[in-house]
Image (cartoon, rainbow, N blue to C red; front, side):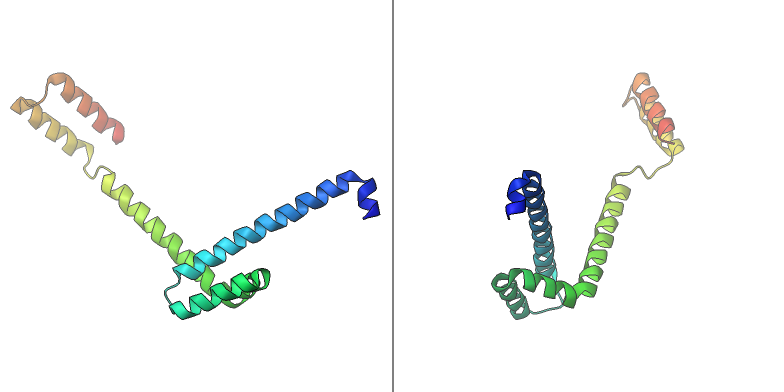
Length: 133
């Protein structure tokens, strides 16, 4: 450590490297724990054993879990992403206008003819329908 004491920049660099490695390990730890609790293909007893293993031997436990369950983690992550994309697509389709502009204009015209809306409101609805097309 005599070399590090005469070069304070190296001490700062070493501290940053250790801090970065610790943050990466925390990220991996949270990923493993999240995957462990989201699993539906294993029993609660196995989840408890994995958690005990991760708590007793943190680094070793996380790395063993990554080695043993890497394929399953990938499959579960891809399935979760597809599920999220599907839910987003369904939401977008549910809030998007499903009628074409001519139908919207016809509905606005019938509202105008019945006296429910004014001419200015009709023109506004017509402009919105044409701009969405």
